[in-house]
Image 1 (cartoon, rainbow, N blue to C red):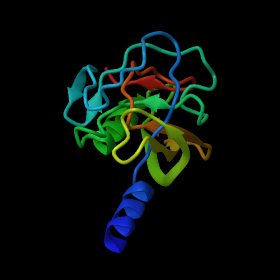
Image 2: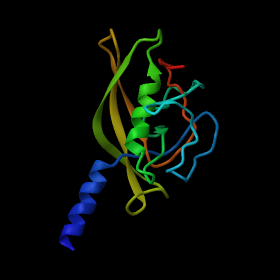
Image 3: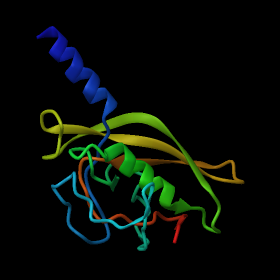
Length: 152
């Protein structure tokens, strides 16, 4: 029993998640299904821009990439980040900072809650960094955040 509690606790610490979405579409409770198109195995094709300044940049409006139940959640997070370019086509780099911001989701792997993954994101040639919040539990339409463009 004690070993099970330790495994569950460690699993929760290693996971990431989110809540709301913005700019159309409906939140998909099938987290393992993300009907987004791929440019290649490591990059989503994202064509729509958001006008919401909070989208991706606040825990209340994370990017819902889905995939946790299908074991592609972390890969979907990287696929989203790999799709981004700077405003003039510059390369974007990122580093995972960890998990935060617990929330309830019907797509949780254990219980009814998850955590968002928090990434530090920067554009090549600048010293500015930003924080993005990604939800690997819930799938939804993804948008290009303000200040970024996307690979084609």
